[in-house]
Image 1: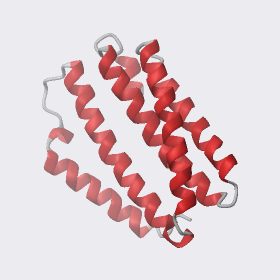
Image 2: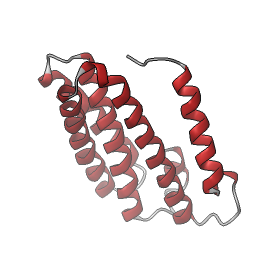
Image 3: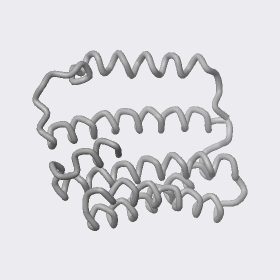
Length: 154
């Protein structure tokens, strides 16, 4: 979101829509799942908390770009929050830790692809360290190896 704010003049409305939709959806689905795993018996509250978090993040991600990006981020965040709450309510509690880890992996990889998209749109042509897919794979692998060593999340 900082990169979006910093280079808002170079980012097209379509790319801004993709940015706000991706961030709103990913945060919404992750937050909805985490909240539903903690409030396993209250589907109503976990759905609206997940939706609220997704909407707020989607709107904040779209504000620097355009009102269309704000709308896309808001709707995607709401949908992600609902889907995350459903996912968290449907899985068995003993699989909650693995689900959150898989969502974190999906979130990290999606943000890496989003950063590539933003860098391409902005027009940075200089070579950066994390533009090499091998180095990015090693960095993500190391991150998740260290993350796994920390123990269970829930």
